Image (cartoon, rainbow over all chains, first blue to last red; front, side, top):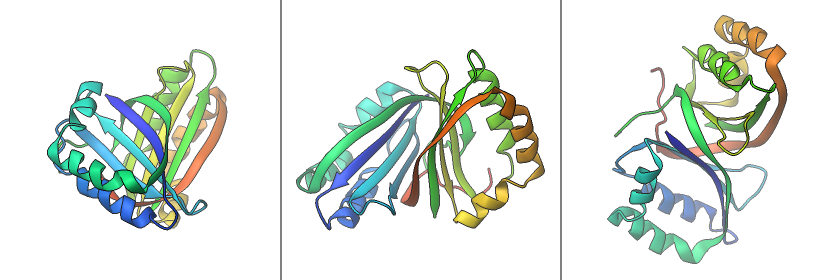
Amino acid sequence: MYGLIGKFISADGKRDELIGYLLEGLRDMPGCLSYIVASDPAEPNTIWVTEAWSDADSHKASLALPQVQAAIQKARPIIAGMEQIAETQPQGGHGLHSGD
Amino acid sequence: MYGLIGKFISADGKRDELIGYLLEGLRDMPGCLSYIVASDPAEPNTIWVTEAWSDADSHKASLALPQVQAAIQKARPIIAGMEQIAETQPQGGHGLHSGD
């Protein structure tokens, strides 16, 4: 498995809008086992995204999916920053599911 | 919802054993929506744990469950460090499920 832990910083006051675009984009992504979008109660513009995929190629391929491309187009103007915290190798747990 | 992103550092060479205890402990935790245990390919003793719960109280209560207490007892001697990266408020996504 392949995992990502990352942070988005939205433009001021645009966090909820950005979260909406992120959630829109994540429907029907082959190989996606988990993709959770969370706000940070301590930082008003920060969004945490934690992902698990069957492999790195599935993640890479997802970026070309039409719904993901559409979400990226809408999100881009209100993204003030992005930071990758870690690339991981998920070993197991609860909540790893193909499809939804 | 309530979320946690955290890091465990195992004693040298004990990461796989520690991951095993973490995975053992997480069965049947009420209110647990996602709990993913991952190794870090870039740091040989690092484990990432990302969690989503229905609320903070469910997370707190889980620490008293017998299977979690048993896992903590076994894990403690081989934990070299712990770091909480963020407390979050999950807003949605894929892979948020009660039970398993």
